[in-house]
Image 1: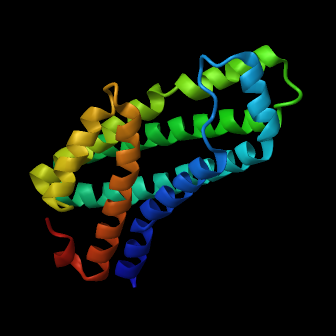
Image 2 (image 1 turned 135 degrees about the vertical axis):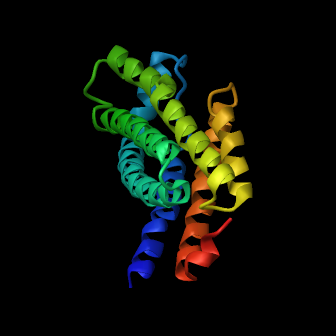
Length: 209
C-alpha cells in the first residue's frame, strides 16, 4: 500500500506538466516587454478571462511541482545515503523554481483581473515584469535539475540517461536558450515522474539506474 501511494505521489510531476502546458495553450502568446501600451492594454482587455484561467492553472501546476520535488527528493536522498547534500540542494532549487512560477501566475492573474481598471502605464509595467522577471524560475530550475542530475549520475535513483539529460538542461537554463531549456525541463519532469511511478509500482529493483 505504501509503495502504491509513493507511485501515485510521483505522478504529481505528470500533473504539473499537463496543467502547465494547458495554461500555455489557454493564454496564447502574451505581449512582449517592448510592445506598445496600446498593444498590451488591448491584448489583456480582449483576453482577460483566458489570462485569468491560465494564471490559475499555472498556480495549480506549481503546487503539483512542489509535491513532485518532495517525492523526487526522497528518492535522491535515499540514493545518496548519509551524504545527502545534493538532494537537499535539488529540493531547495525546486522550491525556488515553484516560487518563480507563482510569481508569473500572480502577475498574469493581476493583468487579467485588472485589464480595464488599471492605468495603461501600470498595465504595461506589469506586462514587462511578466515577460522578463524570469530569474527566480530560471535559477531555481537550473539548480533543481543540475543537482538532481549530479545525484543520479553519481548515486542512482533514476536511469543514468535521465541524469545526464538533467545536467544538460540545467546548464542550458542559464544561457540565452533558457526558454527552450524550460520547455525541455517540463518534458524531463514528465518523463522522470512516469519512470518513478513505474519503478515504484514494480518494486525497488525497477527504480534502479
